[in-house]
Image (cartoon, rainbow, N blue to C red):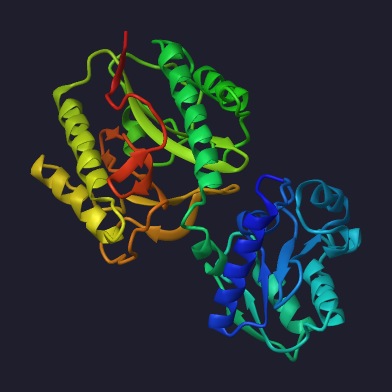
Length: 388
């Protein structure tokens, strides 16, 4: 197990308190990050129906495809009797649906009525799954419980922060691979292969797991876009490339973006570099317990404005444990209107990047909230790296 039984018990107690506040008798959790956080289960099985079920007492249940049940017994803290499976015939075999089986299992365990929470706005919970639950449990009342578990995860334990710092060491090794391997004329996919190798090799005492997002690495005018990955185009003199990448250790992430340039950058990029680094400093200084998310965002926007730049998008979000396709926790955002108060040991990705139709500069930091402000989780040079 990644964490102690006491830590898992505290997590479960917090979720049950949130369920009671929301008037829920049971909770069906389909997000693999939330499933892992509650039970410790880890497997590449989120492409098929699966769920964790929390009721008012006892261990959480894990409901999985039969071939994934052994993985639950190997990785989760719950007992074998708490692992349920459904027929293999229900895998991608319409018009039948695996959640028909979950409805029957819940009914057999006395969860056939009352108020059941489901994660309605979730990558992993489909409309067909919801219809199957409603069809199989006609006496139940369903409520949207999107984010109920996610919001319990936002303050990290010391053990979680230790894992994120290890992920930060891996992120630093990945960026070191960029600095050492970037060269004019080299196809970008070869450089990304070096980065991927560093991600898996990890850092001393921390092997690398697969991250929730693959390397984002646009060059030149491609860098005007925010989420382009890589191609085989040779890297060219006079082009900027930014890498948004994250190490991952035991499913915990530490994303960091840096900008790289072949040859001396033009003056506009140097101006943007200075503005973004100053915005990082201003925002990190403001990121103390009690500050609101929008307070930190305002520091970014105001700092960039003083340098003559404008940023329209949000400038950060909560991070931690995650699975593809997203390393964000999908809770708080650093933007105007989010009045979530920061608390000590929250972890966020602060990203005051700038994008124009011609170029982009991304210099970001993952940090933990402390009484003195934001503390970086990775030690990576912030300045634009200039390659010959």
